[in-house]
Image (cartoon, one colour):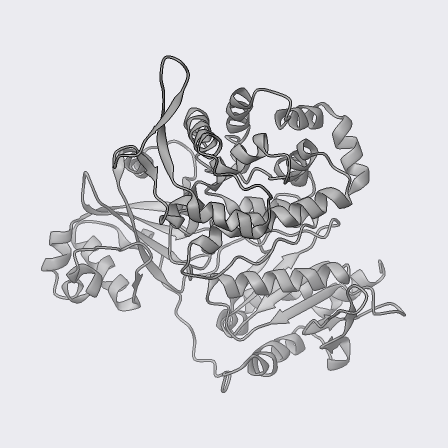
Length: 525
């Protein structure tokens, strides 16, 4: 928390306006409309927070909780869990005398008790309702329902260490995760002596002043191909606009497999009212896991290219494609289904047969024949892949320290894998670069944990660069003066095979973090 900058922000017109936006002393209906308008700005991405709709839902939630006396006497995690268990939402009906009853018929049941996935997806409405009405426990509005990654990024910029997202098939755990987030936010609020309104302004506006928007670097070559689907008028309107000369680089958030990696190929199959392969895209971000979205994982699609329409009938009549399990099952549940390199090659053949120019479509990465030896554990990644490239970049073993114990709090010790040129007499307070090595970061959770762990070490050491790697890739981040970097905007990312075999890529990495480049930074420590 940059308190000097915060004080300047509070006194600015922008700061005063944003703090007033979340005021608890104003009419909640009008406030929510203004908040929805505020969150429609481009920096918040595609969050789909509709003002009138969210107001209606907030009123419905409030009416059910208050009129049916569902609120616990004392707020604890256990009592909140009981509320989550008991919560069902019925359509309220107000008679001419102002008395409220509830339509508990099938058609009047808006949210069933056992639908925890739906309950989690309404957290933005539920949280706003609690924010405006509860005083015994300081609930905070958890907005941006489809862009939890932005919320995470803003909290990172403020130094708020959010609890780990639960990994469970029990969707009730995601509802309870909202309680756990509140506990962390309330602690941050207390430490920094902030009002409720000031905390909201901190998270949804001030935090964005603490990080610089990174320019998009060249994406790594794709290693995976995924199916995804679209349907409905809004989806078609966006997808069809690819064929129009708007001058925009079209991008959008879309459901994906959580193992989607930046640069991967996404094949878009449109469903109703039309049914065919419509376009091919690239994934601008890794799969972004959102516990408060009915589609738990999404990616930011970009660089979409229209294809000649290829229908389910075309796929079933093709000698190769007809044998793919997802085609045999009539493309049911296709979101996030992986296609093999052979499948994608045959799909490009079908596109060419229908008159498409396949030279414009992305090609899968083809790894070279470099032998890294046996890679079965994290140590193999360090010894067989990472250290040899460090030596190519000019480093000697004496330039880094492995498993360096750092003071983090009174008793805890943080132990980064590789710390370069550690400085300082006590606990090595500074180092220009740290690298955290893992065996496999193929899942979203593993990559997110590696990033979070590496960034915590980088902050402890006031590092300028932080790298994470596994058996497949090396990813490098630049840390700004506020100790922040965007997990979706590395300054370098590539496959080890490319780094070893492509002189141009190797030279780029050497320019960024070669020994000479890092030694120059040492003078500032």
